Amino acid sequence: MRRYETIVIIDPDLGKDARETLFGQVRDQIDQYSGRLIKFDEWGNRQLAYKIRKKPRGHYVRLDYCGTIALVDEMERRFKINDSFMKFMTVLLDKEVDLAAIEAEIAEIAEQEKAAASAREKARAAAEQAAAKNAKDVEKDAAPADDASTDESSTDSDTAPAPDAPDSPEPEAAVSAPSQTTETSDDAPESNEKE
Image (cartoon, rainbow, N blue to C red; front, side, top):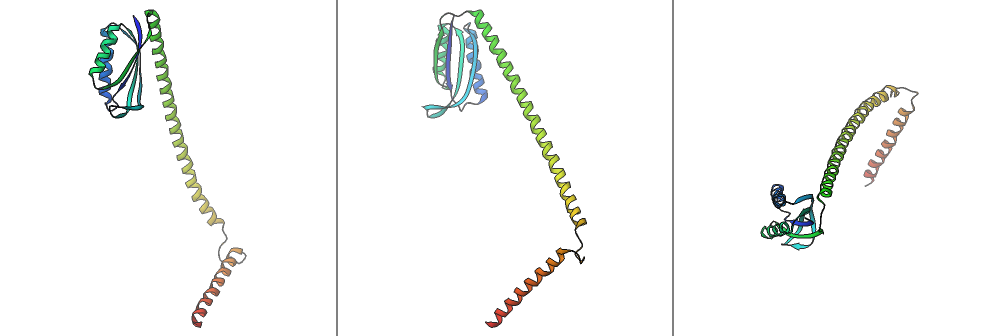
């Protein structure tokens, strides 16, 4: 049994369900020809170096598998028939494969994928907790600020001297300011009278 790697570029306009159907057919074909799928690596939509079938993007998939030349021939025949497969390339990685080593590699890849999924889940949960904590902090900060502004306004009015108090410097300034404005208002009618 030999080990192969096939890179496939699929039409990016296909829906997720249609892609899953195609991938299922490829997996079934590998099993049908007594092959072993080591890794199915979906890279997603990417920019192409040049347009293929007038499309600037493609959905990339990498297959790492073991099988015979008959399996590779049949897979490539189906890739050519189906228009959803825009391009493909198969490379021989190893002429003779130890199946026990391949099984160990498959188990190791499964462990890595499980650990990565667990890490993603923990990161998502931590992000949700941080967002919830930030929302609480914002609400907490907003509530005392509203209370503090009402407290400050009541405190300012309670401690401010009464406007009628004679010893307060603020009312005098207030009184002098209107007299200045009255002088300017007196100047304005005089200029009108001269005209």
